Image (cartoon, rainbow, N blue to C red; front, side, top):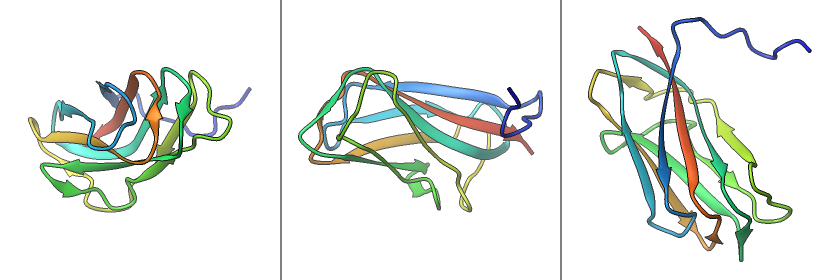
Length: 121
């Protein structure tokens, strides 16, 4: 099977965990070096209940343009992957705070694995 994207060998995935998809729950991690975030995403650890959950991402409290996406409640299952490809405001320097914040009416979802793919500048 051919991969849809050829990733450079120097990309790094940084990750964190949020307790669930409940509003205001967040996951945070740090940028390991100067670069650009080329993808953000989540993998859910349990079925999402009640409603969809929106994930917004930011770097040092500045929203990443194109970095928001929805974790869909309908048909959700353990291991569902949701992601976004940022279009701007996605440059980082070493130590920058990368944050994933949940919002909406979703509940449960178990632990949410959050990740950002960082490509060195």
